[in-house]
Image 1: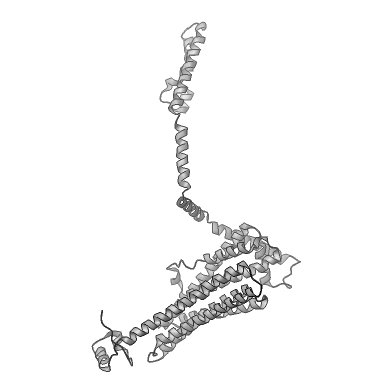
Image 2 (image 1 turned 30 degrees about the horizontal axis):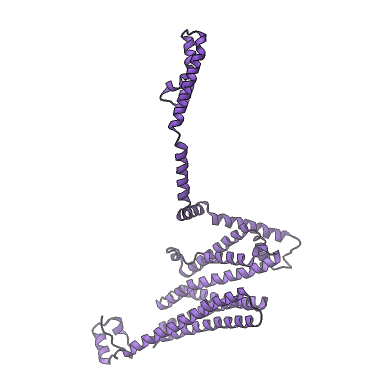
Length: 421
């Protein structure tokens, strides 16, 4: 009865076979007949058990087959990727690594500041920060923590840059291009490539300073990509808000001067070689790009201040852009020339040759091809314009009097006629 109650059996008579000897004795059956009745009860019990096992014999195989199907589905690439992304977002892995590394860095910095062997008077605070960060990169987990920390710092700096230039409207439309991922991945790849984890503390500090210099240069380049279109849009749209213009100009001046200062500092601190020249050239390229943007913005402001528009304004802007790109091309070409000279002088290596080839393709060949293609398109457009018939003063006056729109309203010294589509 207890077994039937616990198992919630709908057919309790199947469990009554062992009770047959007891019921027979209660009914007055003689004791010599009880062993035979017990054997019959045992046989009935075994029969019930065998029938139950036979009816559920395929259940383990069905469960194993279902488990194999689920495992096969889970091992598919897209399901693994979805599972990884789900765990990544739900467990907040980047934030966990960020908090872990910040706590580790804070404890290490406090240990440095309170230690009597490393007083603050004998070492600069920047060196203490770098030393503390280098001490927190001795394991793969701490290196991942530094990677996510740098990524979040870069994201914060880029977000502050957009907020300073545009305001709260910068966060209405999320920009997927600048999320700080590039800076974090750059640091991780450089650390793994250079063997940062295997170095001693002092060597790790100097190597980490160079890696962070590269990361800061990449962040400044991303800030330049944010600030350039905003400043040019202010100049082209004739926006008269002085505060917006002041913010744009101050940000571009900051992006113009800081890379030059960084290039001067690292060239003054380290001995000049091919690798250092690449770092310095990246800073110079950023400054040249910002300088070209400021010159074009100044042309827009000069045209806005004048009563009449400047003649051949598009050609002047094209010449300024071409001059800026030409200077960038010369800087990249000088780096290639120095690297080739250093390789021929005996300081050749496979890593240097690979970097030199990549630099030749990305910064020299692509720039030269873009410049030549731009010049060809410019010359083709100028040839088509020269082939169009010149408009007479009578046609210009007739177009202005007949409501010819903005083109007819402009007081142009010369114009050409184009057929209507």
